[in-house]
Length: 153
Length: 348
Image (cartoon, rainbow over all chains, first blue to last red; front, side, top):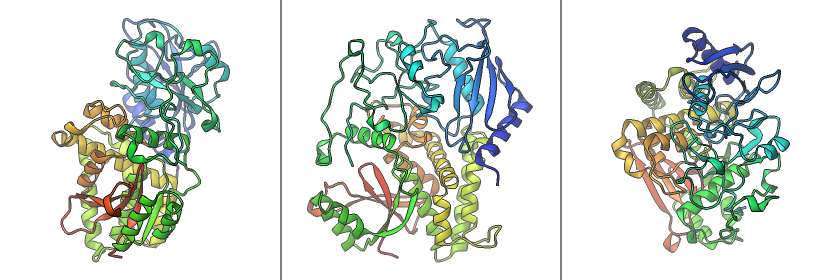
């Protein structure tokens, strides 16, 4: 029997191929069920106008029971958006990627959430603890225990 | 085992629409989280999370002073704690000390084993365990303390009740018709089929297997039922489905629930959507009265919960009953602060 993650991801992939992604989001790589890449742009007026970012999803065999590891790609000249919840190593502090992950969410739902997180940003800056965090951060953002509190940005 | 500094709270959730993002003082609005002061925004959690202390910051001047509330130890009388403290304590315990040694759900053990664990500890608990024994409750089936224990216990006992039904054919048919209906209910509140069908199938297969042979030609037994529930993928799939059903019932019947939707820690009222996202859909979040009511109602089952909390007078144990089926054998659960196990009652 195929794993729960491959069953679910093949359905998500089929839906993306049939219906397309929401505006500003594009699937660039989904060759297997372990790593997917998307490009992300914020449409309309925002602090990120004309900027394009790359989002990486990594899945384990328990997806969607366990959350995907999601981060912005910061290699090959690509950069993470400058945002109070995005660290310069690409890690993102958002509760839905951590203790509020729920299997009712999907890859596209995460993309849309992050897109809207950027769209509503009022000031481009790194998290205040960026340097300290990036120095000690684990490779996989799922190993970080973030403290979520701020719903205003 | 209950020793956790309440300052180690990672659960101060303030969420709107898409979920919360991390605390960054420079961008905090005036109404954000007044108290108590939070630990530093991000703590890299390695394998030994429990030893890292979020309160010890190398640059304390950059952070507000950290309050140190009462240290709760094994000797702390649970009854002196507020509901919020108990919730926080439990959730921290679940988050920080994931109980991976214990199987997701275990074979039956005599209740005397539980009694032995309290003999050197709490006389009030021992008295209550004796009371349960005197009422014919002879054994328990333990579940892992991972925040899913209520859902997992109910699911296991739900299928087990079908196995032991006097007319299994009828019991299974009735369960299947209820379960099948729930798929339509999920769709009616906007869940995509893709999101729930894989989880549904696991439960559906198991229920059907009570009377119909599976691919290997066998019908379900106590042993294979336990195996299924000890298999993380199957077990957690079923838990996820029951969480979805719980959310669905709350959303479909808002009048019954809106007055009772509070964040168990902050006590703040929550909108239905926020309550479901934060406290039902997210795995590992414990169930409380609202979730229990909703799940038992949508499944049309009876659940009796024995509250082993050291508070009962004369060592008696209070049972809280959720009753949504006529003349059906209730599922019995044993509640100890923050945890549910299956309790095996006098009828077997």
